[in-house]
Picture 1 (tube, helix red, strand yellow):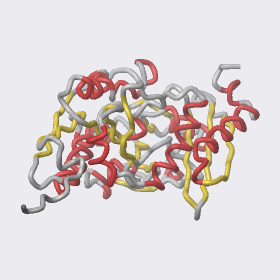
Picture 2: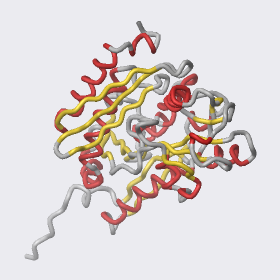
Picture 3: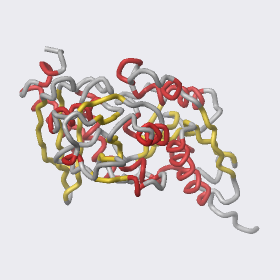
Amino acid sequence: MTAQPAQTPFSRASARVIIATRQSPLAMWQAEHVRDLLAARLPDGSVELLGMTTRGDEILDRTLSKVGGKGLFVKELEVALLDGRAQLAVHSLKDVPMELPPEFALAAVMKREDPRDCLVSVKYGALEELPPGARVGTSSLRRELMLRARFPHLTIHSVRGNVNTRLAKLERGDFDALVMAAAGLKRLGLADRIRQIIPTSVSLPAPGQGALGIETLRDDATTQALLAPLDDAATRAATAAERAVSRGLGGSCQVPLAAYAEVEGDGLRLRALVGNAASGEYVETEAIGRIADAEALGAQAVAHLKERGALRLLGMA
């Protein structure tokens, strides 16, 4: 009798794997990237995309902090997992709520792209060049806080829409500059639009910025086995520490919060800050610990921030 080749969990899976994704250009790039990686592991199967429009994509006339937060980009994709239309959903990790519903799991956190913010402008090459009253657009309270704290002479405005929509508003003169995530521009082949990569000492990134998170049903061991090779241990540890900071201080885009962890040898260096976006006042901290204690390191940073007045700044005290 001829011996049969051993089967892995994913080779026994359905030959058809479906990825739920938002339909913005950046979200599609991210999903296509994951699709191509999975297709290489499933040469006899198919990996397809299920494009969806979420509430976060539909509501463009108000800031996310006023309409329910970044979780609005995730909920419809989770429904597709629950009803079996898709086996996995690809997200920008910074959009993933800090507490997932019990039915879901973060099956993979992929290797991080550039986590930093950047300046995009037609006229100016750096934040330091912007004159008093210059109009700067941003989609996050965290960046608004950074700008008010470091560059109080600038005029800050909220800007919504996908990357190309925001760039079009800049081109037509609505803004003198935009502050955006560098990773998104690089992934879309728009790195030449970046005028300045803003140092993390000036603008500390959001928790999970630059990383992709892949969500599955918690009990879907087969899909999780397929995704396991895409998980990057260093990025998962760093972002776990960052997300623990956000979780400990409210865990939503309504909180002007930054947290960024870097792997240094077998340890993590975590920097975090939180403040009041309207006034530019903030408190910050730094914590160093073992990679294995990533979430505990985040909790330590939260305790330090609270000792320094974080709850007062957030109106919680």
